[in-house]
Length: 300
Image 1 (cartoon, rainbow, N blue to C red):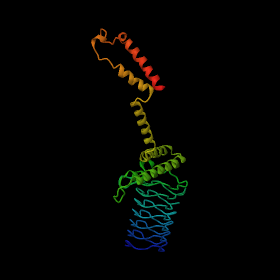
Image 2 (tube, rainbow, N blue to C red):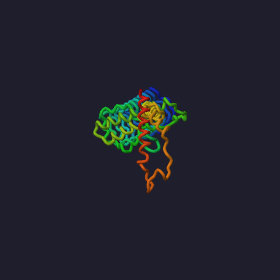
Image 3 (cartoon, rainbow, N blue to C red):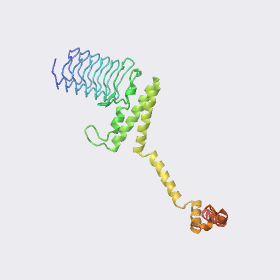
């Protein structure tokens, strides 16, 4: 059982090396050649494996939490039950990889590549502790997505990140950053909805398309595009309604000034308390004629 914590092994040639159950936390293996290596059960938390070559490597039950696997080559690798929580798989090559029961909760799979030989059954993409995986701009290339339990993925990692007002470092996000994150969340949900619909998974596709619409509404709110125009039109209309700028509004104001409403008294009511329309007829006729006169003057 080797102890190689924080070892510097960048660009090392380690083809078919046996490092089962080895401790390599924080090790630098950037650009290392690990083709066919046996790393099952190894501890590689936080290790740097940028551009490492891990084709057909055995990574069963390996711990790669928070590992950096940018542009790593994992074609044909065995990743059964591998722990990749919060791993950075940006532009990772996973064509033909065997990911049965792999844990990708909170992992970043942006620009990762799969193909129709990638085995994704039982893939875990979300849990309560690590959050959801980020799936924007993935090249699925015909990978079978029907074997993934999509009902367990309620929200994508991009949307979760956009909802946070602070970065993982605790720094506050400005408006431009949050707007960009919500736009990324819209793109991720729409892309996934399109791919799922192409494979006949319409119910799951509809759910992610709905999530995209919710994020798009927030984008519009931040950009203040349609909501500001609508509210501006309403404010303009209400101002016009309030001030007597139209002929009918000016006529109404003239009528109310010359013919104010009469206070209630018993003389202008019939027996039973109902209004006497016959006694008010002359007054209504005068008000109507006055209103027509005001409208004609305003229009001219």
